Length: 252
Image (cartoon, rainbow, N blue to C red; front, side, top):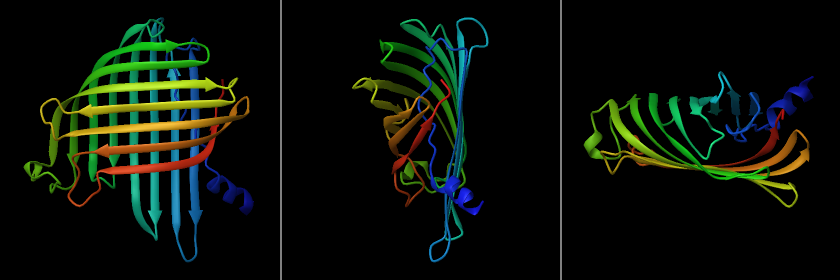
């Protein structure tokens, strides 16, 4: 039993492959639980959970939600406890060009973000949509509200502001490609998100994955995530990089 518990914590199962809202399946769902625990001279605990669900509530509409929770502690001290909920509503996603609504809610312990939410709308254009590959470009605009737990920032003009509101414009580029007779799968999801009123307030993210199929419902995966935020609490680094190894589980 102890060996089984250790295995569940040590082996990361990453179910973060993107769900394509233009697929014809009416219901798609994924669940991931990842973790690592080490005790002794170095005490480390990491727990991550994520759900991905896509449904068709009515004809020509698709609702997609991604929800994740992350907790990390090193030497008994909490390093991360983050919640992220990404929600999209698409109209006629089988077309070449289609509109979308979005709503995000998140917290970030390390970056001192008590709560952040965004609401907006935009359009998506399908550059490629075949059985083996797809590539999509989206343009959206959002209202963002961020409440920080501290008010001393790396950019002096924001000092003293516990709450920062802004309108953002976002460019998204998402894709998935099957290569060498589906023996290699490459995924990427990137965006750049500047404030439309403040040039010094912007962020970007790039998430790249390489998958090697092991079984019909199981792929080995290497994932690289790079994030950047221009506005952070003073003495914090603006960028984070993550390189992870694990497996992608899917039910379709």
